Length: 583
Ligand code: ASP
Image (tube, rainbow, N blue to C red; front, side):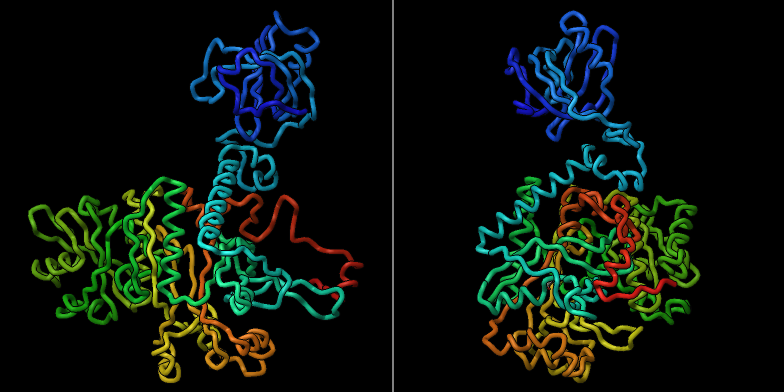
């Protein structure tokens, strides 16, 4: 028996018991005649004591030789500590060791295994197994487990069945490139790893499973943006005989359940907002609604004067920054420079200070009088003491810029409390999205999403205006889930493929299996998927998903610990019928 207890377990009630513990040496303090060793495992730390009066000389020598991260087993008696440590759950006791076995030695770790470590990111990734011994990483993994367990229990209680779908499949278009796997047995042919189980879950609905979920790995070969992983985990769900409303209700329930069970917090408001509303009021389809600063469109009250910049702009739009009138000129210049960085790309910013005496002082006083500025503040909801920030230009660009400014200022003003949770649904997404590069429409969600039935006829005349029964779940400014009601008849699906530029042959080649299935009594269905990594990170009050993944890849998609991807040898290449020509 390696242990009778774990290292976070013993209390004063165990005093005088003989116990056996196993774990890692966190650190030892050698005072010559007394040696204390902190013994660590997943559950906590227990202090061991060796002292010259009560411990044999041989064992004292052995205890002195213990290095950091040695794996040891000890047997001894639980005794009361003379100086207690209130910060440690086991801080009132220690173990007077009578038997010590070194189970394995350890070389000195490349960074300290403490909550605050001296190890840089790259080093910690290379030795991730050591990083996982640290509390912050360990606790994140335990937290993730707790979230997934709550997800499974909630969905199971709603009669969802977890079904596994295959990883070696044929391309599923979710808008990224596929990772492909060469087939040894089928020369010149490749599997694709799923970008999501989308088509399979739809086939499960045709198969009558009614309510499906799966906590599942998905793979997307994208140019890595910050905090994206080439493989990531979804909570993937699908339901039969449902309308959008049914789906929103079920997953609103799941979201409420998670926030309640994890944080004990009741969500009092769960708003719904159309895509158009979100773009108008927040400039963004994933608005952070923990704070106000809603957009106020100012075209009507700015384009009657001689200010060419505004007169020529498609959109003039502002936000009221709470308390922003206290910003110095220098701070405002700082904000303007921030906006002008290439990542944001604004040409400038107009502002109006809302003074305490009800007057205004703007950067364009030459053009606008007090009455004009009063209207700006009314429309943006500014109070005295606020600063109205105004941007202008092409609608899409300006919205994106002002949205970025809104988030940045909210961050600086401390309005984004990570322990406050503000979920909402954004609904009625456009069905299609114009792609500049390929000069054609792409599915905004994916090609299986159903257009709103009354808008199908618009597909021929104004495809960009067609809205879909598609929705996103947004939490604290992050899209954490998205889904749609699906097309379930062959004709509409064929029409959709046609609009996406597939020839009937191409559609048949790629999605014939689905179109066939639609001929055998496919029920109306719909669903969604949550990004588990991001959901867990946000629920954990943190920003980066990497910290919640046991073995993440770095920003270049590499696993630096196992050194993947890597070359394969000639024989393997040959077996796979591949020839690699290196540039
Ligand atoms: N398959 C979709 C995705 O990965 C989710 C869905 O439509 O259910 O985003």
